[in-house]
Image (cartoon, rainbow, N blue to C red; front, side, top):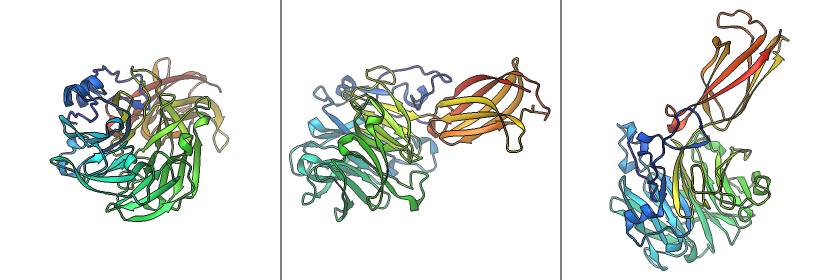
Length: 435
């Protein structure tokens, strides 16, 4: 992989990462990927854009891999992202015009090249960028050309009152939440209004599944949206019917508040919680998986996180904060690993092994006694996210029954995405095998 520089000044703090222990659901990229740079601060932003530059009410984020900068013959450049962050307080977008240069777009106002309290943003690989120009009650369409972001058009003023977030699809449509009207409005790229989905209450962030970037089948199209003014996350079908709901008050002492969301390759929903300085992860059915972070400015800490964006193919994550932005990769961790005695379907004694992963991963299990390997039980087996049970038939590698006693079960986990080959996690459990 080539070294990259991402937007919003995700550039500055060097960190030495343990390659084995400490693997988390979100992990820092290896040093060779980005020179150990995973967090950008306001001081770095000033170095790149001038002394007057600052973070002022960061909001939505978008990342994409532009086709015009892609070399199909060189898979090593696939991690070179274009990213766009809404700096709402200054009515501008901060973005990278190249691997090594940042730029801004927008000035305060209501005309061409103007923005007014913008919120959400979305982009696609063809260079189309859409911004919720909230104060002007419109959607602004931009084009990312070799000269940078260029104005194309604005639309929606006759319908929208308070557009909050936007998500594009591979078919050339965009879905816009209107916080005031309690709707999701669907437009074409050209600004033609297709239809309105009603029944929401002050919706915020939105994410649309994209079969071009995920494992989702085309027949399973769904919408994820932050509803009820940040207290709920909902999964809807394309007709607006509620399929599943997750409540923020179920997570952190009843005071969680969801802001923006992003979907990963497996259509897990990642949602920022600005009040509790957390990022919550839910699976495709909105079952809670894990929360990452705490308040502060140290490792795996956030200060009022707002926007979040994921390049789904490789699991690259960007998070906007009050005065900085952070860059992560999606990893996998062991949420549960238990061994106990049981019986198989034929009534034979066996060791039951329960494994719970925070994300998809490759699992190997070696069973030892007195430091010697008894059985290479699993080798680089791909496990889905969540809980899974496997059984050991109490035989060694040669097929012989093992004697009773204490055994050591060593689980070796490797993540998928770009983090594969760079990080791993080892968990060891001891269990007594009886006769």
